[in-house]
Length: 159
Image 1 (cartoon, rainbow, N blue to C red):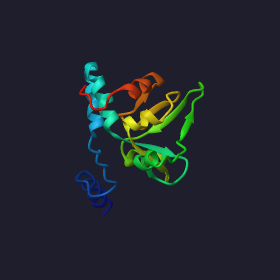
Image 2 (cartoon, rainbow, N blue to C red; image 1 turned 180 degrees about the horizontal axis):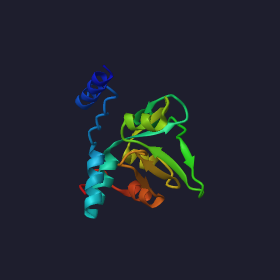
Image 3 (tube, rainbow, N blue to C red; image 1 turned 120 degrees about the vertical axis):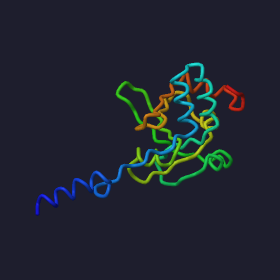
């Protein structure tokens, strides 16, 4: 009897009928694809930055109110972004390109503001380092020099 139960469990597990289902990997975003292309070919780096400038970027806030970048910028509303200090004195702004990635990082309900990457570059002081998509294989750190370049770049120009 015990042997039959064991055999049933092994067969069921092999067929995927019991236990937790493997999570389906989310489809890569345009920013993810540009990131991969830039890793393969450094000549694609400018295209990655331009893709970032045109992407919707989510900035977690310290309050639960979620605003859109248009409302925040158009009505001159202010928000308090989540800034994380590092041991070396650097300060990091966490940013994400999907709500799912933001939620996975936050592990709780969190407010956020959505900006086009170009508007985020305009709005934020380049003293901070940015970390895009923390916790994913598409994680990218932007240094203050990167952010200064983004502030001056034309998001419409082809890379």
